[in-house]
Image (cartoon, rainbow, N blue to C red; front, side, top):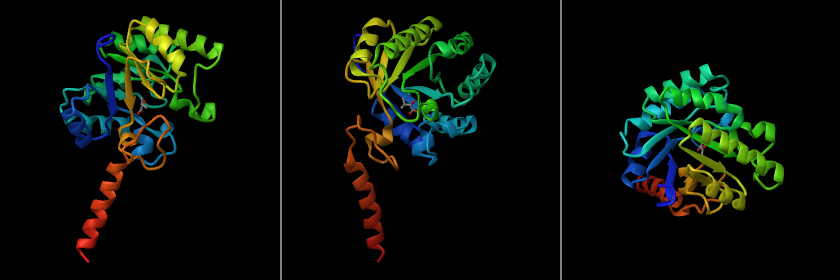
Length: 240
Ligand code: KIV
């Protein structure tokens, strides 16, 4: 789709969501570890386990989507190539057609090993939510020369390792645009400007149903939340 058609991707965490999004012809569904915050009530993604990911990937996969189903390898599940392969295979066995993990040069061995096993790999660079504790928050990346250089090196490492696309999270818009022009594979942005080959959002942010916080880059549809609340209040009123 690079160079021809904007790639659209959304997160899906369960059967019903996957079915609804597939009916909208969304081409890529990510069982993102963002489910830790928006479904499980965790403070960040570092508490999400392989069991959580298997459980939700299985539910999404039951929708037998036309959309490509990608599942996140959670925090701590790809420290070594052996772990990365074992856990990627577990997600594939539950219906994921590709996996995603965070990082570039630092995980390129693991990425190669996963791809050698026949499991397609989606990269994730920029702000890496699994590193939020080390980084002390969610911060825009690629603003200075050092960060820009590191991003290009990481992206090239993922291309060399065989990733089919790269999610760019909170990358300064101009840098994201330069990466998009330079790379032979698609970039899928989130909070990284309009120049990427595609865009991904956390679906519950789009719907305004994420429980605690909606990021600035999302033009959310508050109407959905209001209607959901109204249906509950309306039903309660009808019983009075
Ligand atoms: O976990 C997730 O939902 C993600 C997206 C924000 C890209 O990684």
